[in-house]
Length: 282
Image (cartoon, rainbow, N blue to C red; front, side):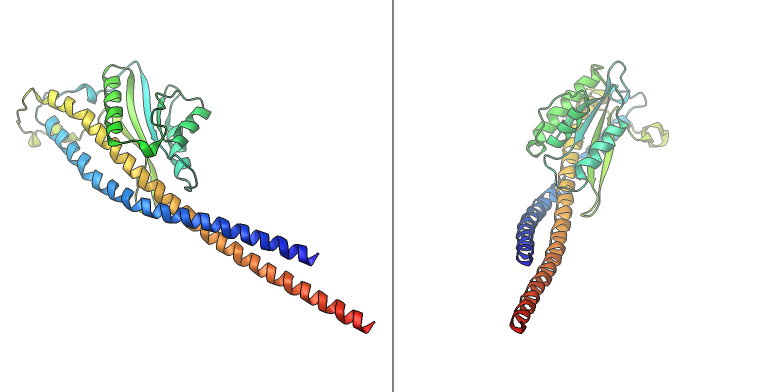
């Protein structure tokens, strides 16, 4: 019986060691991908920050400035762009952003899911899906971001959508990734243009409203690309942390199993010695 017990423990040790190799390899892969994803996320931030400031300056250029992008549309429902991952094993990354977005949606909301996990989540709950063309989050390019932005901007102007909200995960640090909901349309510009002390008379060829309306889809595409970069970095950081914790747990289990194996082996040896001594005495 003791021999069977030690064999079973040895099998478990071997299985756990194999699992640890997998989790450690996934941790190293996530660490490698995280460096490039983090660099892209940091590099993308100045672009749409500068573009947003330029849009504020244009909106501030005229006291009579007005744009359809600044007013909520009637008739259609809201659209939620929800960014999640293509795979699991990333801690609470997917679950956190999906539950946050779902909790904010009304019954008339339409979803544009990005990532396999987002598509599957909203399919299960029966939410109307705008398109599944972006099922693979890892293959979404910067060109796709601008395509999505132009499609939603045109739909907003046509009154098909009343508003557009972006749900993604913000990369705060290696250990902190926070889900966030960012309203995209209607645009909320700063209150600076309402202050006459800051008013400036800048003339734009074609008119400030025309220039502003032409920039909006580019701005939205930049924001969406930035959110994709933030989400990708968050996913890799969450997966790295989860796999590191899994590897450490595997080490602890292997250590415990080794202790059990040694005790079982020692018990078997002791029993054999006892049986030999008892046999010789008889």
